[in-house]
Length: 146
Image 1: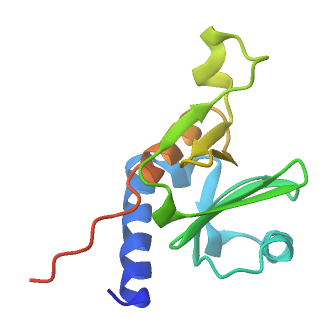
Image 2: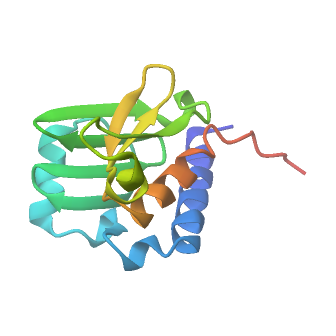
């Protein structure tokens, strides 16, 4: 599959899932809808072309971008990047020890990805679980050409 076809297919699937979860009505937006100031802040941190699609934005110092090729997250001065094809459907909720077990689902704001357990930030609550649901699709099976 050509990169353009794959990028387009991944992008369509991500936007379809995001719409299913009403993500674009919450603390998430399309990358193309960000202000120039926001896109400049993100571009300063990641030089790699990940084909950005949607963004979870809290501030210039805390955001996550989901692209057609990878997901990247910036928080606490750290930059984390993971290829979508390397996730291998291994997505789990990460919670810090200082969150009580009864509050984990409502207060956790990190997802652990893949074997190397890379931590990705997202707003706590339904946005975090919607992102988990999207990421559990990857890698997508190759499209059948009929």
